[in-house]
Length: 353
Image (cartoon, rainbow, N blue to C red; front, side):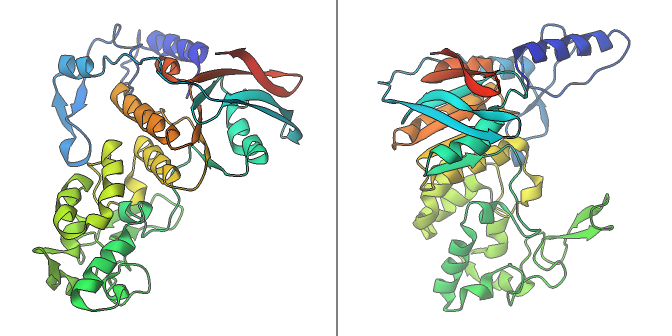
């Protein structure tokens, strides 16, 4: 989340600390590789495939990605001129390229998030903002609810066994929700808002379902089994038993989210997983203009490349993507780069590409 100059200052400070301290850094940037005495690479993927020390040279080679200029015919430019006080700003004067990829750059605190969150919604009618914040939800929220496939899974069992879909639900108030954890899949020990501890519910194996549902099976799989499947595994299952869910699952897989479990609690998702799910939800919304705040934060080069390809596919469906980010390697892959500066409290373009 830092611009070029800020990154350099942080880098210099950390290198200085390492003269008298042992420093352990978790990061994806190349800055530290030349000075690090030891580099660990973890893999081979995420979720069930993670946690192993893998060959560092092989991993670094896989991240040696060259970001390319887009081969597209840039469409119309739209002037965005707003005279309105927001926080300490008086307005905006920039232009973006419609139905294409735009990126807004500039030092931290210049107003990129304010532009995306506050100003663009004043200008565009069909606009959606994707923030840096983690996805919100109650204690029962999981990957299935975030992807809006939980009800479709309940309906699959409902149609098969001729019962109301609430019979197969783990949502609060449902008939067969786990009585022990009330559908959360975990027991929380400790006062609310304190350093509480979450322990997997043994009664429901972390699924939130009542044990009676274990006997209802489709293709030898109960809803308990499905909640423990990864998206990759569930895609194979759905090809035979529920093709209606394939599209959204394939989209998630294309964003390298195939390792996530269907019933995985939303509070366990990383920042990179959060932003990719939010981007996926926005892509499937009716919004024609999508503003995305730092989508590349916490992602490695492979993941950034995949996300860029996804943005490009979205723009082909007459959607305009406006990203604010600091990952300099990615700038070349955008149709328009807007370097933002503050002149007399107006947010304006410093240079135009």
